[in-house]
Length: 252
Image (cartoon, rainbow, N blue to C red; front, side):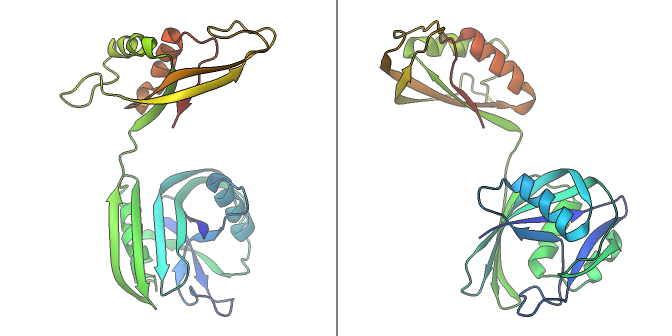
């Protein structure tokens, strides 16, 4: 089950929801953040903004993605929660049909009746920790184990489809700014054999193939990462070196 979870913050307080209005609620009696299920084909960042509006009345301008939390409870299906914080919002707080909403001073959060696993990720949020994956394993209300992994989100991954003889051209362009450097290693990238398919339409100026004909060629897929602050520079350099009129570049 895919879920979203958000903790709305001011400088000194966090909006907490005391779940006490629904029967057969696994969260009943606990204080949690704003949460809900993702709808079909809904992006997590859109889902949490919708949930904030529905549950609190606030309109969120932007939410910060902090981590993924996996909630395993007895034999129930796992819940995969996209965890956010939000400080950029406006509007008026309304009554919630799932419990009582209350702004709690940050130094009083630990005194609330929380899931033990929530204490772990709330502490990570409070310390402004890097992006993380946290798995929580419960037997009823008891946290029996957990796994925590931090993720380096300082990089952007590129995938570039290119004829083999142009790989070195792209590498040379990126190397001018040491964009493929990893520690004591330079020009770090991977190459995968792929088969490119396309049909050139009227008005195109194809590097390979003919107008109106379906083309099939052997290509290479270059995969590498650059520091995210150089993402736009890397994209520019790749397009500059790439022979195709419209190069296929995936930025992940």
